[in-house]
Image (tube, rainbow, N blue to C red; front, side, top):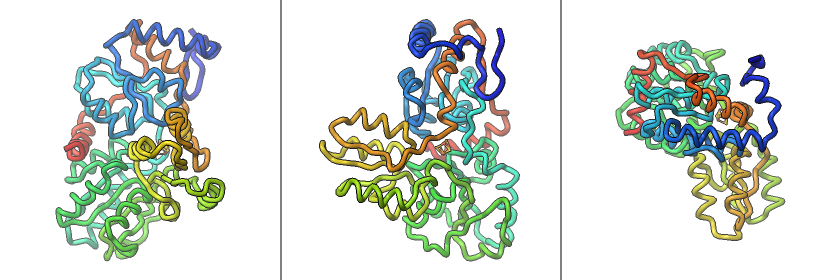
Length: 357
Ligand code: SF4
């Protein structure tokens, strides 16, 4: 059986299957596997994947689901940090499979444990108060482990404010990784001034004294999808759809959030759309697969993408990859198991459990 080389490699025969055959074969093997498998699909996945997902959600919802499903195999259609989180939270007997194991979130790759540890050490030389590290869910397990070991917590875009409230209530200062924009948007909305929020560039760190007056330092990482929206996109949407409500994700830079009418996590955006009255127009600034699906689901409203921005990493997983993963399980061979070493998992679990509590 020849296997194609490169990202998302599957045996040759899958590459030549028509979509209707892929769908039929996936339905067949899915039915055969029954409750041996739970398929989790992030909202940014392609429609061909979402139609087979037993559970869809944003990263927080899927983390919770991974911790509660009982199937021996969790097939996680998303990006690597999500599957890692599932592997950390599920029971030791369960196995997590990622159909395209190379699907990484570029933002998560922008912070390593070594870099975060160096930032921590540098800030420790100028901050007398305890440093509470907070990491966005979109980070790799080694960074989550560092955060857990140092008394910090994971946050998502849904709960960043509550987690930061918790951190500040402990009387410390915050090192926030890896998304500059989620950290900055949340901090400013909580009432911190711009001068109280510093930006740590891991590729060219400024001297620690630069941050001595900051209450929070955010990592210079970003999501290429959400930083791709521009003020011109907002102006065009206002001109073309007067009266429309513009809602964007808090991974967007501050000027985009300020120019919009609201910002919220993936699940909060879905909530805004669901609760809007029939006939309303909502312009949504997030990944376009999800916006397209909302537009179909809420056909009594006009749901328009702020601009078509697609996450290439999320888009890597196609139906042939899911079929290959499921057929592997049906024949007793698990491909692309995601595993986290026990020490890293223990530290990361601390940070995740603090969030889930
Ligand atoms: S949408 Fe952005 S944050 Fe989410 S996986 Fe893609 S690059 Fe990462």
